[in-house]
Figure: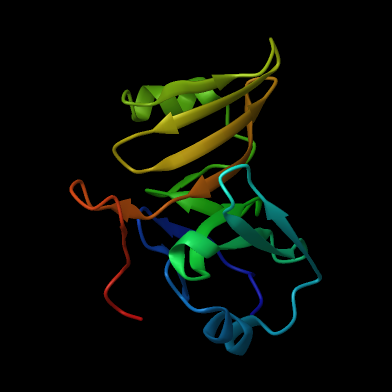
Amino acid sequence: MKIDKPVTIKPFIGFGEILLGLTKEKVFDLLGHAESSSSDEWPDGTISESWQYPALGFVLNFDSDANYRLSTITITSASAELDELKIIGTNINTLIEKYPAIVVDEDIDNSIKDYLDPDKEISFWVVNELIEHITLFPEYDSITDEPVWPVNQ
């Protein structure tokens, strides 16, 4: 997969053929080996396996509590677009004007903040007011708290 045109981000879904909820096998069939990978165990016992594709501009995480399906997508590609607006490198205030639901989720320090659009389940990592990367999350069922995966898998 080569990203040479705008990456259209679809909240709760993914982008292009990379869809939240895909199995590791399907992602491997689409992209081949990751340039690097790592695995982290969280205090609650959940394991998150991360596949990094820096040349393509994204990181894919497969979490044990989601049966190792594609649980989050982090995008650093400068060609990433949300509603035809290039996201990476954009000033956060420009984004807040367009999406007023965005709120500070985590205030690391004066120059680093993590913003969240709760309507789109997208996290915006901001350094010195500029968006460095975004993370897409699936929608979660309000009763079971289980991920609701996109239909076309």
